[in-house]
Image 1 (cartoon, rainbow, N blue to C red):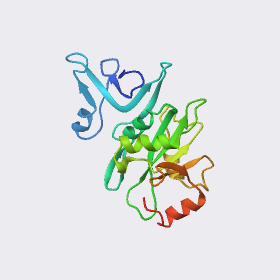
Image 2: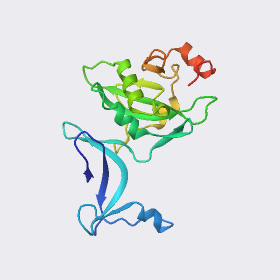
Image 3: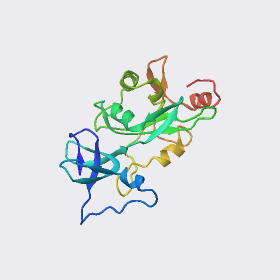
Image 4: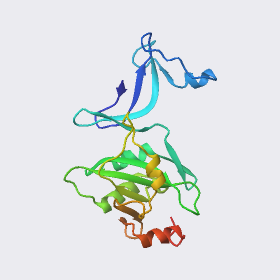
Length: 207
């Protein structure tokens, strides 16, 4: 069961009862207790908090959105991937987004990167993406890089795979799909060329 408005991310919960028991985790009871939600819809009921956020689209299909607590650190701050996805998803030409952190030599933490799928028959407006993130997110949470994909890989349970995206990073030699870099001087995202990539890796461009 999930409790949310159509088009808005909601927490997926599962009712715990005799026919659908939850036996808990090994170790301290606190770990089990923290996963249980009590008196959710009526007094005495118990639900398991899966930690998964899901969304119902206009066609009433449900799909995985993100994990609660899924974060990475950048500039000494925790960045919530769900928050960044939510902000990007407000743009009318974005169908789906997957946000993660990528490692950059010489920097602690991980810089934000967003993999994006466009809606059918819609074009990418890089200036609008820039304006959306800088006006809606703190500076440390704004994705430094964009990757445009036609489809996203998912597990059998429809969770978006991030490990491969994280591993590939923002290297244009490894990625054939369009890549973009956040340019604060131009107030837009610009194509991430090999030359620009080299400048970032050499520390000639500060993030």
